[in-house]
Image 1 (cartoon, rainbow, N blue to C red):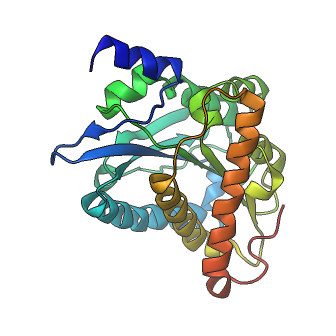
Image 2: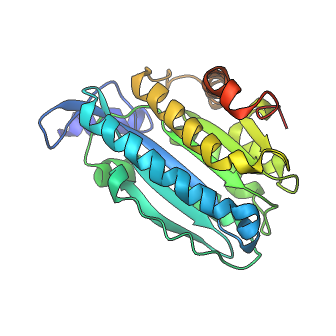
Length: 267
């Protein structure tokens, strides 16, 4: 990559209408999928963490097939867990290589530390070097939590909202149970309608919901054009939140009969 190309990428916050040459010689974009998962001790209830693990195994199968067959883009997966600390269980890897341990921690839920860890990775220097590519599609960020942050997440989420990789992405929250801090998830996604609330009657659908949302969002962003990186942050955040709502509408349409009428009510 020449210096002029790298300058263009940095000026655009890490995005440009370009491609990278994959190992098979095909010119492709990369679509990053970030799964941010609450692994505090409370996630043991209702087999929540087991459902998350099962969903990720199913997601890996679909995304591996996508990467083999899609000539336009490949998906790279990252998993960030948080309990009494935040830790990466895989970063910008091929889907088949993702194997998160998901060992549950204490009852602490350091969501703020997780947001800070995510922000530290969302830069051209880190992603482009690690992903070994030039061109990117909008990233998908999926945040799952069943409780409240035990640290102060205000400053980290404010920093994220000034990061173009994050602002431009598709942001979806899944509130697991009635005790989940939907306010924090709404701040993360930018819109109330982009947070899915699972209640007592629908907790058993977590595996299916996570799998379907991740697959639809990844497929949609793999085909989508980039947003205009020249617009201001607030407008970009608003537009990407609107695009996310469209993705969730597609999930509702496709899976309403399977998952039930009440599953996707706004929290």
